[in-house]
Image (cartoon, rainbow, N blue to C red; front, side, top):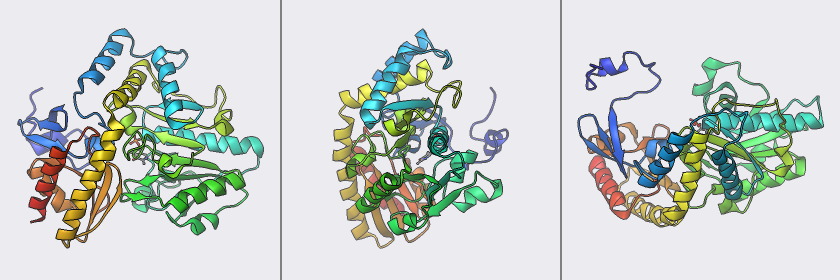
Length: 394
Ligand SMILES: *Cc1c(COP(=O)(O)O)cnc(C)c1O
C-alpha cells in the first residue's frame, strides 16, 4: 500500500489509540530489531518477555514452517500430534497433570478462574466462589482477568466486573488471611509481579499461601505468564520456592511469538472441567503447539536456563554498579532476566533517550524500567545496554 510509515497521522489513522506507538518495525534478527528506515535497535524488552529465542531463530522457524506446510488448523474436535506432544512437554515442565491451551495469557487466566469456580461449585452449589487477588497485580484485560487485576485505573470505567473478588497486599500474608472465608475458592497471584513494578514474592509469603490453600481447600493459582518459561532461571519461578500451585497460567514465551497460552492443573482440579464446560476454536491448534514443542526443544538444545542464570547474574551485577554510581536509581530487583530498575524520577524520558540511542526497554509503572531481554542475551549486549543507560542518565 502507498502509506508513508514515517507519517505519524497516517500510521495512527485506522488503529484504535490504546497504545502510544511511534516506531514501525520491519524485521528482526537475534537481539536486534530493524525499523522501516533501516535503524537497528538492541531489544531488551523481547516484545514484552515473549521472544525468548530472540528474532528469526533458524531452528524455531524451520520447525514452525514445516508444520505450516503440513497443517495449520483443525479445531478442538480433533487431536494433532503437536497438541499431544505439547501437553506432555508442559506437564513435564510444570510438574502438573493436565493442560488446556489458549490463544493468550488473558484466556489462560479466564480458564483458571472458571476451573477454580467449578471445583468449588462441585463441592457446594451455594458457594459464592470468592477469589482473593493482589494489589498491583496484572492478569489481563478481559472482564474476568480484569476483575482480578489490582489496578483501579484499568478497571473503573469497565465496571461492573465479575463479583466476589477481594484484594490483599502482596507479600503480606496476614492481609490474605484476613480475607479468607468459607466461600473463598481461589487465591491468584503472580509469582513475580511484572506490570506492577517487578516485585518478587518473599519465600515466606508464597509458602504461607500454599499452606493456607492446603488447610482451607482453596485453589492456588500462580500466574507465570510473564515470569515463567525460564525467565527467572528455572522453567517456572515457583520452583525457586520448592512449592507447586494447583493451577499455573503461562503464555508470552511459551510460543516465542506465536499467540498461545495455557493453564495447567494438578490432579486435585483436573476433573472439574468436563466436555461442554470450556472451549476455544483456535486454542492449541497444530501450528501454535508445534511452536510450543519447538520452544521446549530449543530451550534444551541451546541451554537457555543456564544462559539465564549466567546472564541474569551479570546484568544484576552491572545494574547494582549503576545503582551505587547514580543517586537517581533507588532500587534494582527481580530474578534472572526479569529485572526492574526503580528511579526517583519519571522513567519515561530515560526510556525515550534509550530509544533514540537504539536500545528498547519497557516501563513498569511510572518510575520503573523493566529489563526482560530475549533469553539468548550475551555479555556484549548487556554491556551495550549499560553503556546506553549511562548515556541516558548523564
Ligand atoms: C501479559 C500478562 C498477562 C496477559 O497476557 P496476554 O497474552 O496479554 O493476554 C497476564 N498476566 C501476566 C502476569 C502478564 O504479564
